[in-house]
Length: 111
Length: 111
Image 1 (tube, one colour):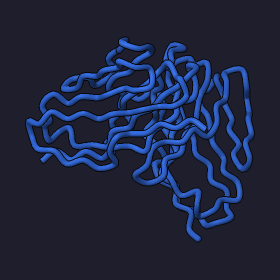
Image 2: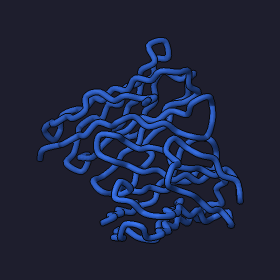
Image 3: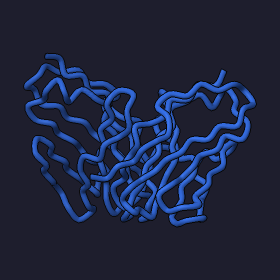
């Protein structure tokens, strides 16, 4: 079974802090994705990566950056956390351009 | 804007009854996928139907696709309390490996 893990289930950070969310997949997938999920807004794509060191902006990249130095790891970085970045963050991976496999999510609270 | 929109937004049924959820989308697609999300967790892929398929079954799940109406439905037969979750449809825009998710249907199965 594909396994996608995220570094934390719950995280509390202060405004202005730099935040790292890590995602690791064990199925040698080329594609990896970061979403945020908010009530009433559904899942929104922040960034995705189709290969090591390659990245593309999704629908809401502002305030975020990503890093993919190794195929299995995709990191989401909040350079200076703000309260409007309080959200559920979901990482996913896919091997073909088809079904995506999700991690358990990180619920981030920025105070 | 959302590619897929689910209907209804929320559904409450008795255990043993069938649950039907609908999804409408806007652009041409090569496949449509359904995912389930238990409260506070990541999404789990349920089933994928390709654009040249009209119906697909997987256990108690039945998915239909009508490309002329740009709509799909997910039927869960003989529902169980464990089916309580949110259900999302997702489509890849322009045959890409990204997915655009609908806003979801919250299903409550009462024991």
